[in-house]
Length: 224
Image (cartoon, rainbow, N blue to C red; front, side):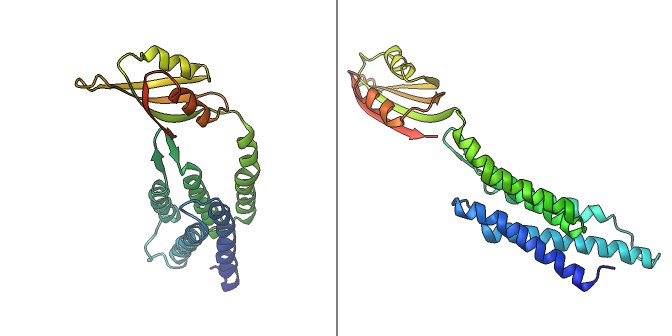
């Protein structure tokens, strides 16, 4: 049977670990922040303690219902998965919130480890999570990576798709998924496309280059 002191220690550590990880998400303006991560971690600690208590009661009294201690934990992690899915948002060609969803999943796992009394495992997992969120964030920011933007171009009938693509390729941009629309009355052509950028290029530069093409009537650019 878990002593009261041990029980309180596990709950306090769950609140501390979850709160610190959530604080990092809160600082960076993510939808799930300090309180959410702390409550997720704390709830998983408590559920694991309850699960262990059922096992203890079953060992003390053979007539008591036997319950697999991993069943409650498995059900809880399923619920955490739905919570994580709620913070993932698709904006244009990019998906946001994956890191926050992963951090929610991680604090849930840390909570289960704390609830089971695995202090060393939970401490290492907590430390590695902070390393990933703080240190690797800086490393990732310095890495060259592909970015995307959505373009809508309204042009006169004389401006060809080739001219638009050549202007984009001059900045290392590759157009994909091009859609066409034509106004049969005025002859206006509307191009809608997703553009992949392989290098660090100012979106404003691309916008200005396209706006300067002969025959362009309107340009709309949306990042991601």
